[in-house]
Length: 141
Image (cartoon, rainbow, N blue to C red; front, side, top):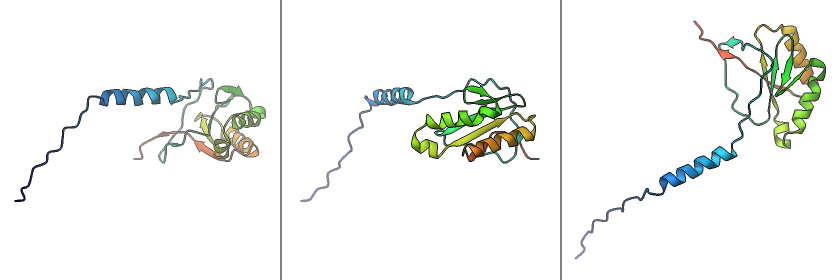
């Protein structure tokens, strides 16, 4: 009468899997834009215990500070021209990224706090209000 037939699932053909993986890999290699600054301002990153990684990379301006110089992404400047460089970097971004602009402040640990306060004040005057302070994590004992 009614007989149950055993249905086996056919095997999965994986012959084209490497082609697909390499195609996706090449796509991401071509599309990804790696941004590296040529750091001309020497700085030693301060250490802290409550350090978090900055996840969002679009709309970020790196500002390197030591006692003698300031560098905005790839351009060395001084405090008087910092606002101009921030404005130029913001104008080169898309409107969405310019709205979510974050300044990653990478200061030498021996930089006087007065210099950092002056940089912060200049950033506030140029409406760069999101500031991320870079540092390394130390273990709390």
